[in-house]
Image (cartoon, rainbow, N blue to C red):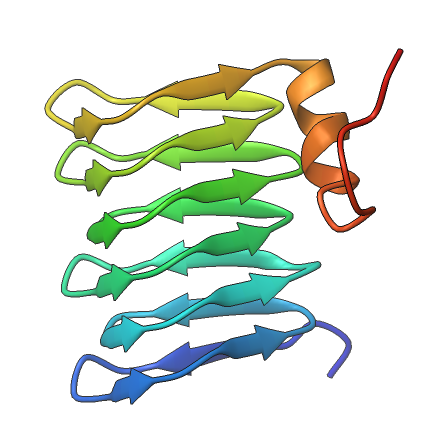
Length: 123
């Protein structure tokens, strides 16, 4: 198998940090940081309380925390996000709830990619 999609089902509850390499689908409850170079799908039944730092996020469920992605953040119609978003591209479907601030664009994506580089970057 060349492409692996990992799934955390809706009966899974985790307290702590999660790191993964490829794609992950979460439909359970997570309390802690989620980080990866891969793509994250937050399922309809999911609740994540904590920071998300990945390449891309598709949100169907609920997130209470900030999302920082290098590429695309997508909020589907039933999604609830209480927190800030930093992304290259942000798509919000009608019906989604977003309470927070957003930084969107290529500059925001570069900032997301360099967020672990230790301090503000001057142009």
